[in-house]
Length: 599
Image (tube, rainbow, N blue to C red; front, side, top):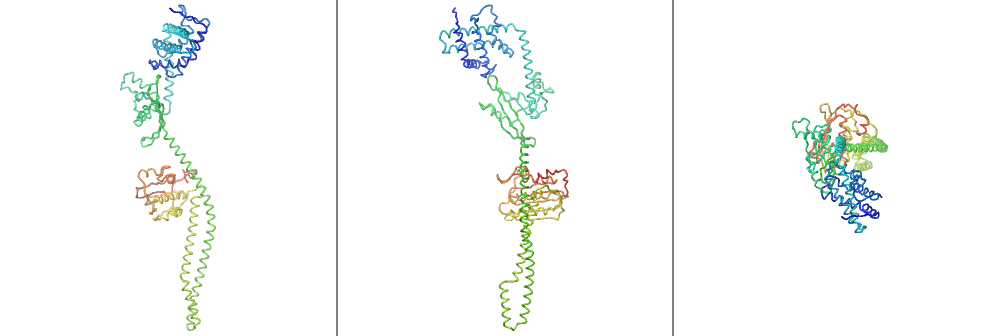
């Protein structure tokens, strides 16, 4: 039998070999674990193996550096308390608590031994005889470990029971902690097995899938149902839900995609006549061997968040609109002031010119009578006859009667134009004047005319305007806001008419309310568009041609007046908007802030 004697120098080389080859040791042990099936009982993470290899190597290095270290084994040695075996014994106890059998642990330890032998054999810094001696030292060190934890394992039945009980308590506490966290999550979470079946689901997921739930009912209910062999009469047996149909293809595609650990997407679904926006996250679960074990599905409902975002955008747009209206109002006040001054001069001068013209016409009429009288008296005087003939000739050339009539017409038209400019300025001031409007009695027919005047330039070239106004009582309202509604509908009607068309405006009493109808012969809308025209940011116009807020604000204004507004339309047949306004709405519940916001 061959024996070996190791010098201090060999022990140093042995230590350096193990320390410098730590990465190679980790890779070899991990390779053995995966190749021979041990990885399914432990982790495949490289860093987890580093702790084991580093601890074992340190115990070897510490042993050989001890001046009293002896390579060979002795019959009276206490291997259970051997410092070389101490690390391995602690590891064995830890694995035993996890349910690892002695033979399994010993079997894998053989591959640890093989890894160390391979590293020593392949270390070029060692001479041939040094490799043989170092390999022998490694064998004896592993022998100490095996003897040590076999001795500890064989004499620990009572200790083993205590360990199992303590380990069960730890596992139970960890499980309860996990379940508490899992059930407390405010969003649905599904744990699917490798066959994409629901293995567990939290409280929020059970409710989301349409079931009644109390926290923990699915987990404990499933366990209880399994313990009585699936007794269907069990009252608290959980309802096992299926993964929603729309989610199945997404999960299947995700699982089939190699190399992808995580995926997320948004999904819109119909739910009880409501449109839900869901944010779904998928994550693969891998067991300790790296094998696919299932999938985690997390679902967040973004519907309210999206509505809040839309509402914030709408409020921001309305605030911007309010700022614009205030600026327009200030501008209108200045422009109105500047225009009113010259218009006042023009109107005043036209009145004076009319008076002058009337006087001149009267004077001309008297002159004509005088000429006729003189002509009769001087019928036989050649000189007078020639003069009077010349006057008639000039009168005929100038066409005095036409001038007198036409001057009156020109002055009348000038007055009408000046009055129209005045009315436009007044309408502009009334429509866009900054400040908080108070409800007042107003004539709806006048409000409609005011809105038409504001849009006259847009309407006059392609629209034939027909007004059918009934005699209607005045309405308590916010006139400027109603002007905004009418102008928006009229502007939309004009834009819907491509070349030539007609807009018909009618008013009448309907029960205890005023009914206003504005119809156009434009392009019309499809039924699905009509359903959405009062939604914020919805528009049928090309991108950049509208904000999609005009009819939404109009709808709010009519609602504020406790009235109704709706539209009838067909593609190619035009659109009719019908508005009903009560004669005396109650504005007490409407705050000033709301009024300003809705202007």
